[in-house]
Image (cartoon, rainbow, N blue to C red):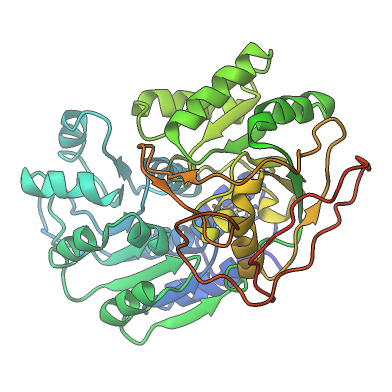
Amino acid sequence: MSFTIFGLSDEIIRAVTECGYTDPTPIQLQAIPAVLAGGDLLAGAQTGTGKTAGFTLPILHRLSNRSIKGPSSGRPPIRALILVPTRELAAQVEESIRDYGKYLKLSSMVMIGGVSINPQITRLKSRVDILVATPGRLLDHVQQKTLDLSHIEILVLDEADRMLDMGFIRDIKKILVLLPKQRQNLLFSATFSDGIRALAESLLNHPAMIEVARRNATADNVTHVVHPVDRERKRDLLAHLIKQHHWSQVLVFTRTKHGANKLAEHLVTNGIPSLAIHGNKSQSARTRALAEFKTGSLQVLVATDIAARGIDISELPHVVNFELPNVPEDYVHRIGRTGRAGAEGDAVSLVCVDELKLLTDIERLIKRDLFNKVIAGFEPDPRIRAEPIVNGSGGGQRRTLPGLPGRSQRRSQPSAKPRAPRIPSGPSSGRAPVLQRSGGRGR
Ligand code: AMP
């Protein structure tokens, strides 16, 4: 089924064809007609499903076909606002708008923090039809009175769940009161927490509702594998896997900024070109690392969860969880970087004894057990005891993992029903099975 079914303008179809898209993805099949119809939309879609084109294409069509409601003379007003959680995602979305709108007269702008505000103020003096912004910087502009949002016709909250996770709800509310009451609202979210439901209820007016991926599902075309390994041997195992399998483009997730730096350094000393991106890096360093990674000149990009949000590299073949995320939903977000738009991908998790509870939580969320494979030469030592995990905030804050035996401060109820030990597959180490979970709950 081709893109011509939607009645999008020839200019848009031409640009989409040049992007190499032949068929709309499932989210596009549902979202494009809904947005073209002009009503509000609540869409459950993960990153990697083609959701950006799902809202961008009909927005471009609507804006290019409708006369401007703003002032009759002077610079036309900003008509669409797309709010996103991270700088990378903002850049990504705006790039898509430019790609899909290259044969239209519409103009877009990205507004993000971490870079000087002055060029943005200058840019705002010329025509901007579509603004893609992160909430913090947008409010800086509002405070400096350099931004007029009074003619917004379409509002998009993209990755709304992530915006709430990142504490943007107050900023979003401040922004909403600056917009005209009469407008089209589109809310995209990978997951539907109570917070998202409350936001949707207050924001949306009789929305069309679409959901393409099962809640918290991961793409079917991704192979998941867990390599049990001791905490101190993870770095060597990762270098070993990269070298042995000749992985050429690997996105690696760590829990902390410091951990990301240390790991990238270790890989570099092992002859594997690597860079870390995280919130403490300047925006230009992040952009440069991402660009090098995308072109393939950088073999490994080590990222924290927040920094990686919005990374869109088509057909990224390997995602490695060097450490499991503290929040199980982040596993789904991380894995969303591979197996995108139908391509095959593989998701490798290096799991030590400290992380068994986190693994259980992830498996419960995605409703499947992850395949275990011990790598010969990296068999975990069963005598090693679990230690508390250093929190992802990067500080010295420590917490005890619930569910692990022998710890003094338990945070959650241990289960009455112990989980059966797992027998790892793969090369036999001749040792006792690793990854035994005490306190795991049955599913
Ligand atoms: P998104 O979910 O918007 O982040 O998109 C994920 C990836 O899918 C991006 O690399 C898009 O360029 C790509 N994409 C979007 N729509 C299509 C399509 N209809 N056919 C093929 N690739 C697509």
